[in-house]
Length: 49
Image (cartoon, rainbow, N blue to C red; front, side, top):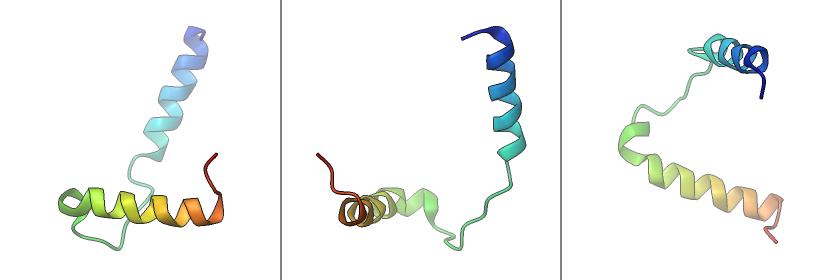
């Protein structure tokens, strides 16, 4: 990866900070529960090989 590509990735990442919000106020506490739930939904929609 070139330094200009790396810089562009950093800029894109910084631009995304704070742009997304959750309706859940307990993400830190229940992160694993939410991740497991999302994985179940994804496996139904897109079966894993």
